[in-house]
Length: 73
Image (cartoon, rainbow, N blue to C red; front, side):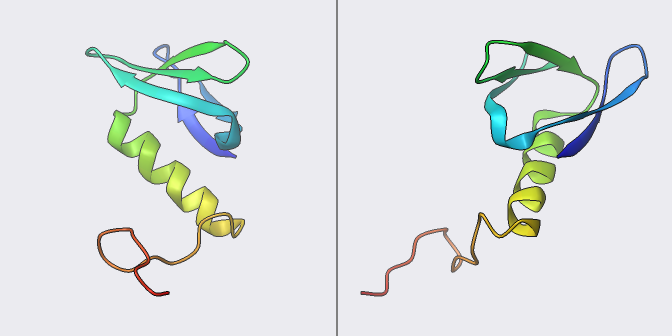
């Protein structure tokens, strides 16, 4: 779960596992897998970084070498 801020300044918590897309135009819009859309104050980069941190916290995203691809076979 990640904490974000609506345009009216109210914080809310969203399940990062349900994020399908993040777009900026100029406000950041998050589309969930259930079709709901949220517009937030945070930039797309901030939402992305919080999502990655959440994935690491719950061990859904292992450590990858620089470049993001595991070349070991």
